[in-house]
Structure formats: structure tokens, C-alpha cells
Amino acid sequence: MEPSRSALKEERAEIIRRLENLGSFRRGTVSTNYRKCGKPTCHCAKEGDQGHGPQHLWNATIGGKSYARHLKTAAEVKQYEEETMRYREFLALSKRFIEINEKLCQMHAVREEEELSQVEKKLQTRSLR
Image (cartoon, rainbow, N blue to C red; front, side, top):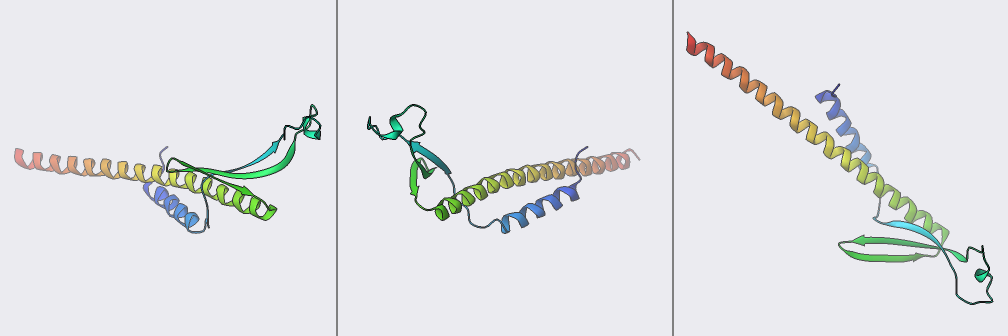
């Protein structure tokens, strides 16, 4: 069963409230990397060793241009992870907001067609008299 017009409007209002309280966010991802230095005598050269690290890196492609930043402190890693998580939440909320608005527009168009159809029927019955 399709949700009612009022239920969709209520959900849309809830999305707006959630967007208002979302806080700061940024595009991109945070990755954790381990690297091998290439020195044959280093511990990282041994089979099964994960390498040097962890190293944390924020990456984003914005307007076709790549950006990256090495995250040095745990606080910085936590901040960037939270901000990129909020960005993904923003995207999900925005997508749902658009879906709701499209359904509301469709409902409005159907209602107008029904009203127009009723007016046409009234005019037809009057013209037959």
C-alpha cells in the first residue's frame, strides 16, 4: 500500500530536521594503510609481516580533481572518519528526500487529473440537458 500524502509530508519534515542537526561533514574516505619500505633487511620484508604503519589517509575527488591528506593524530583520524560518515548520511537523506518529493509531485498530478475529470463530467451532463 502506498503511503498517504500526509505520511510522506511528515517523513519529509523529519528528514529536514535530521539534516539541520547533521553537523559538519566532508566528502571522501579515510583509509588505513601499511606499507613495505623495500629494504631487504627490514622486518617488513619478511613473509607475513603487514609492513610499516598504520598510516591514515583522507582521499576525495571533487570536481574531477583528487585531494589527499595524511592524517597524523588519532584525533584527526576520528574527526575525518566522523565527518565522512556524516557526508554518507547526508547523501542517503538527500536521496530519500528526492524520492519523497517525486512521489508527492506524482500524487499532486494524479489529483489534478481526477479533479479535471470530474469537472469535465459535470460539464458533459450539463450540456446534455
